[in-house]
Length: 474
Image (cartoon, rainbow, N blue to C red; front, side):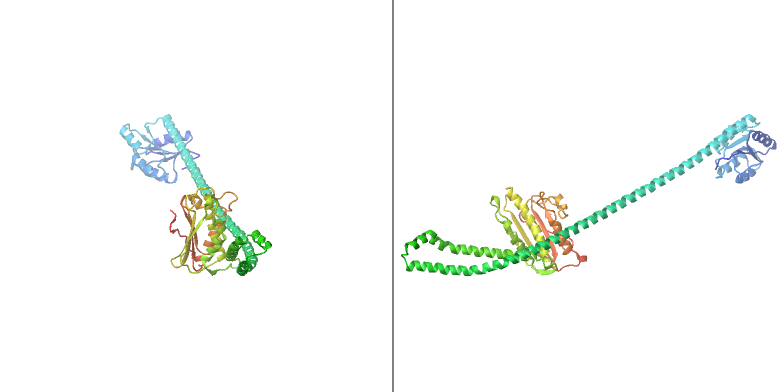
C-alpha cells in the first residue's frame, strides 16, 4: 500500500440523493470521489481501485453494510482501509456490531455536512499517517536487515581472517621449527664430523706410540728383572764390595730400588693398557666413517662411552664417586648408525653425571650416587636401553619441553639445550624408535631408548612407549 497523491473516498449508498449530497461536499473539499449503489458493486470496484476511505451505508438491498464490511476486511487488499458506517439507526447494538466488524466510525443520517467532512478528514489523516508509518517501519526493517547482514558478513570475515591468521601462524611456527631442527642438524652434523675426524686422528696418532710402549714394557720388565737378578748374584758372590760401590748402594737405596722397580713397571704397564683402551674407545665412539646403517653391538657402544667418561665417575669432592651398575640383557646385534647411537648414549649419560655431580659438589647426597644401565629385548623386535640415575629428578614442567631445541635447565654457560633434542631426532627420525623420560621430583630420572633391531621404513615408525621397569633406587 502506498500513499496516494489524491485521496479517493468510495461512497456506497442505494439512495442517489445521498450519493449526490456527499459527493458534492467531498469534491468541494478536495477529495476524489467514487460511488457504488450496493455492496456487490462496491466489492467489485475495490478490486481495481482501492480507495483511501469508504463511507458505507448499513441498510442496502442485497448484502447489507455489515456483510459488505466483513468481506472488505477479509480481503487482503482492503483489510486496512478505514470504513465509516452511515446509518439512520441509533441503536447502540448496531454500532457495536459495526465497530466489531472493523469500522472506525459512524455517521448518523440525516447528514451534517461539517460533521461528515470533519470525520472523513480525521480518518483520512489517520490512514495516511498509518501508511507513512508502515512504510517507515518497512524501511527501518530493511535497514535493520541490511545492518544485520553486514554485521554477519563482517563477523564471518573476522572469523575467516582470525582462522587464516591462526593457520598462517601455525604454518610459520612449523616452518620455524623445521628450520631450527635443520640448523641444529647441520651444525651438529658438522661438529660431529669434525670431532669424529679429530678424535680418529688423535686416536691414530696416539695408537702407534702407545702400542710401541705397551709392547716393549713386557720386554723391558724382563730385562730389568734379569739385571736385578744379576746384581743380587754379585752381592752374594762378592759380599765385600769396594768403598765406592758401597757408597753408591747407599746413595741409590738399592734395597728399595729392587723392591719398587717391578711395581713401577707394573703401574706403567697398567697405564699403557688404560691409554690403549681409551684409544680403542675413541675409535669405537667416533666411527666418523660409518654414516650408513651397520650391524653393531649396543653394549660395546655403551661401554666405549663409559670408558671415555670414566674420569668423571671417579672420586670427587666429599669423598664421593659415581657408581655404574650394568644390568645387560642378552641382545642381538642391532642395525643402526653406530656413531650417532654413541652420541645419544654420551648425551644422556653426561646429563645423568651432571645431575649427580651437582648434588655431590653441594654436599646434598645422602645415598650412594648411582647410574643404572638396563638393556633388554622387547617383543622380539626392539631393543630397549634404560639409563636411570638416583638424582633429584626433573620437574613436570621441564619434562614437557625436555626435547625442545635450546631448552636447558642448566645454568647459563653450562649447556646449549641441544643434546636431548638431537638425541630425540636421532632415535625417532633416523632410527624409527622412541626416546622418553620418566621422572618425579626427588625420585631420579629414567631415560628409555627403544629402537628396532632391524631398521624400519619411515612409514613404519614405532610409537613412543611409556613402559618402565621403575626406579630401583626407591
